[in-house]
Image (cartoon, rainbow, N blue to C red; front, side, top):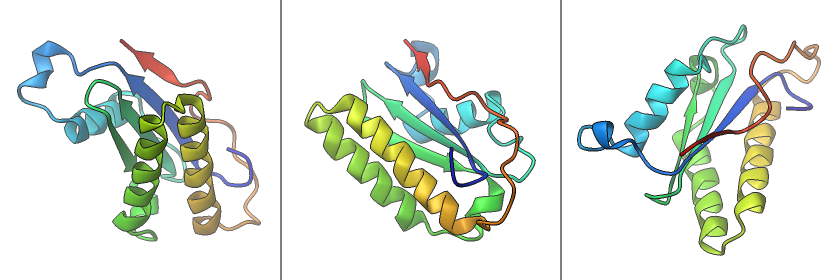
Length: 130
């Protein structure tokens, strides 16, 4: 999260809990975690959730309303595709790191470079959900 004021939260989940799997796909699960973890609640509406579901082998990116108006869905889909390709090659750490870097690049283009760095509003460590 250097060079931009965006807040990126990484969540890696083994599988969607059985109690939710029948009524919730990975996109809905990512949206749920975006809300539950307060990723939406950043001062500049600059929160981004990078969600990886290992069982489903899917990646979702949920971004806050402050970013939505200045980016396209294609940008985020391309980042997801890149992460999935690296996961398929069993380059797990590289996939996550590269994904965060790519999100950071989008954020640095979106937010004014001259904006002062904000306090870290979300934790930097990935959240692992078994």
